[in-house]
Amino acid sequence: MSGNPYQKYKEEAVMTMTPGEMLLLLYDELLKRLTLAELHLNKENFNEFEKQVTRSEEIVRYLKETLDFQYPISRELYQMYDFFLVELSRAHASRKKELLQEVRRLAQELREAFGEAEKKVSE
Image 1 (cartoon, helix red, strand yellow):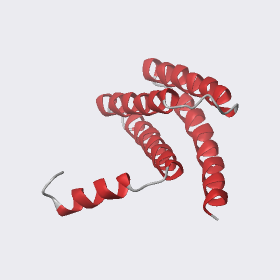
Image 2 (image 1 turned 135 degrees about the horizontal axis):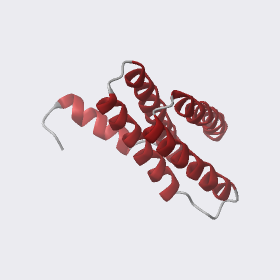
Image 3 (image 1 turned 90 degrees about the vertical axis):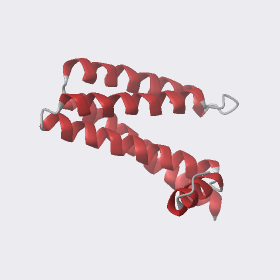
Image 4 (image 1 turned 45 degrees about the vertical axis):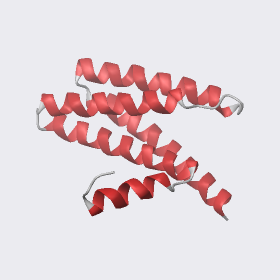
């Protein structure tokens, strides 16, 4: 661990998260990166735009790779994540913000659904 107390705190907080909390954190990070990508695209800062889209793709790949197929919903999520990756690739190539907005809208809906599920599990 790092000698920085704040960094140590953040690492310990992540280590004590439930799987549901970790999933929400990943969605929050994805939404943040998609928003930043759109902001950089609007400013025509294409290097930062590409970095944010690439990071978004990495997060979606991680979400896809960590699915547990013992649950039927995982197959549907797998297809949704594939769709996200295709749309992010298209956004990366075409620099169309509408593609980013669509992925962000769908990711927000999933985040809200998982947030509600996490609340019910923790009650």
